[in-house]
Image (cartoon, rainbow, N blue to C red; front, side, top):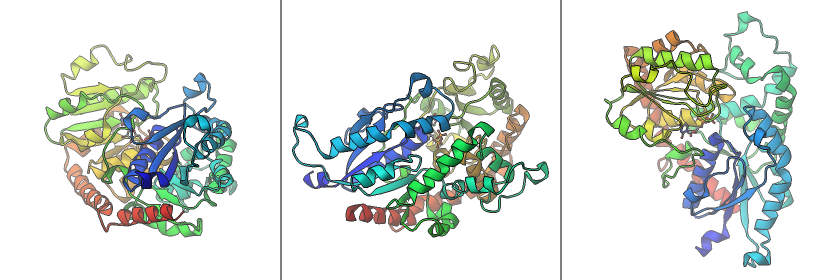
Length: 458
Ligand code: UDP
């Protein structure tokens, strides 16, 4: 225990579900390698400390008003958090390093390093002022991480307006993204300046860091990892999907997963159920929601659908479904507010996944060999979906068409037709490669060893 206390790692996740999950999983991995762990977190979306009794948690005030915490504008939230959190983080770190007499400890705490999300843009100077090395966590596919830093430059070079005739073309510096995808990544007109200055700051605060930890692996990201030395001259640690490393499982869900999903799946035939979830941030208009509902019902196949409360504009939950909709499914469909996603994807009854292609969901699906129907909305989801449909060919892209017939057709192509068998065979091969990478001697496992050595050397 004494040895563990000598080497403490501080982790500071962005308060978004898709960032908290990989950060806490990384914490578990580092704990299993002998490091003590302190998680510094905002009061907004605070992780549940009781689920992680072996870590120390330290909350800082983020200054968000109640209205701001409920905003659907994630860029605005990230901007406010970055504006508000520098001083609290500084004070929080000072308190951790120099314990006062009230805490009963007299020794200064030795901190090996700070690990925080690439989306925090003030942390490098804070870490430097305490003489603590900083490692950046990249919770995106690395292709996206490198590519999205080019967005301000692409915009300056006059990419927009984009003629319709070029919409399907590939973006030369950002393949396999198509130009129509990039338009959506580049943001709405009111946000352009805010987005570009944020991306410039991400690049500026990443370059002087001591390394970057990537939640991806050689098997999924070889080209971009090979390119990385052109931008960064520090070590890169692609440690693979964090949730498949051999550490004890515990949930870092901000919402309570509905456990009735599992007995419901137990009663279903093998690979007969479509799992539907659009992650923790995506919201739908009422008409999009109804199109998905009708598409699922008309497919006549079983489905398990996560609809987060508040995710349908202007509605609390699913009250806009037509009267008698649930009864008409005759038990074939189940709708829940939040699900134990990892368990669902690992369940034998789950046959495919209609997903927004957040990077965590994409990795989780690959690791369980579950083929996908891609319905990306924003940001890296658009790139991940291109890899799914155009590069790895392990799913079907809806191309943004949220229409009942398109959804019904895609579900049946994947779940019933022979096309689905071919896709399943391909994802099985990729699943094996990625899972092998975290086993002893695999690329991710070696990278993790190098990361542990690096942190130990600080
Ligand atoms: N998730 C979950 N239950 C749900 C929906 C999502 O546990 O009902 C988890 C999912 O397993 C993933 C994370 O929430 O780890 C979502 O992250 P992702 O990057 O896929 O999307 P985001 O929420 O950031 O858009």
